[in-house]
Length: 521
Image (tube, rainbow, N blue to C red; front, side, top):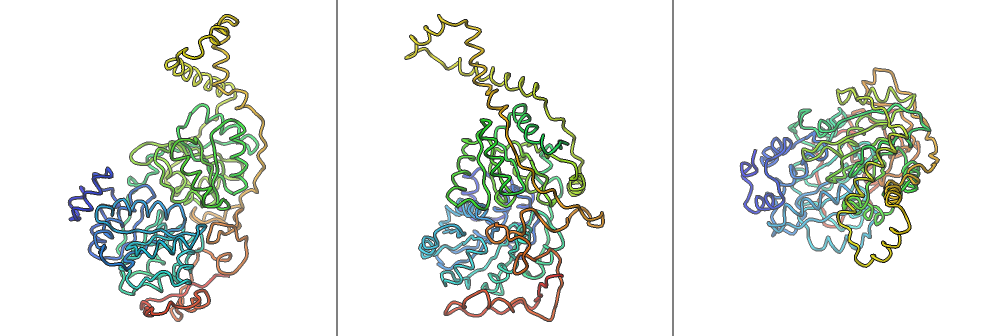
């Protein structure tokens, strides 16, 4: 379906054409007409299928650039996703002169306050920083016509439900609400019931998901052999741009240092890095200055980086849905990708749960031997040698080149060049990767392969992705089970968390359908 068929304004069609969009993706084709009609929509869309344009284009169509109020609000779970969403909306709305702004934690709030004084029509933000601005009375949501809850399943996993509830309380009751999620468990649908009015559900068939463009393999290995197995695969497969997933922040740090020790261009990102360091690393990766990005699930969630050819799951994810998000970093824009998951003894049940979710058995892959990796490195070094010789002149080095040629045999010179380019010495340096705490034993098959026993090695994550351990309280004790109590309202705890309603704010009447989320013991 062509974008012209949606009846969009010339300014939006111009921006769509300028940025290389031609035909609508399945999620865009199904949701854009509904959103234009003003319907509340729950959309299942894997990252990378064009969901930002799916909700962005209808929002931009309705925005009045002459109205200084915030007319649309997009809530994102992570800083990286918020920035990418704002960038995309800014591009699509450029010809219509719509102002967009992003707010997130880890960045000087004073600069954000200054930017908000420019009166953006669309605001994108993470839950914690949006509440910070509400506390400071620096944002006004009374003019919001459309609310978007993006990556809803990740919001739930990160314990943002109460924050979202608070933010929604400050938006008009007659707003349009859009909810997008890569997976659609029952918990997400319950969130839809809580915040939406008679939503239309849009599910993309399996063929529309990016994971079908990914060749998925597993490697059975021992923990102490895992790193060598992975780096030998690197040398054989020669990925152009790859993401390596580790289960914890400590694991990411160790893997990054080990890869650097072996001469790979690698850097890591996780929740403990400050925002400036994260952005530098991501920019370098996008530019191709790095070959490997090592990341935790939270840090990599929502990353939209074109050109990622391989994903390596150094650690099996604890949740099957996380696997889908991980491998969704590759196989984008119609290009095929490759994912390799390393499985050690005791993790087979987790692997089977993943295969049940994706409805596919992974092909077993035998890791290369040390000799096979050596041969692959020499082959690549030879190709690189020919490439270097093809563009090399003796200008400015003629005397030195003649001296070496007179002193050494040509075959020995070629061998030295091959040895240097193959990096054999670096690639075989011994490294020590600490063993992570084993995953807890899975529940029985009654779990249907989706939920695992609590007790993640990283703990339950709070607002910025940091570990909260297993403490109780607002997020640490949150579970994915809901008890609906129709006799209470979710606003009961809001006043404990918001200092005061900004002066001049009209109190927003709660929706008729109100539920309270009660922790299960």
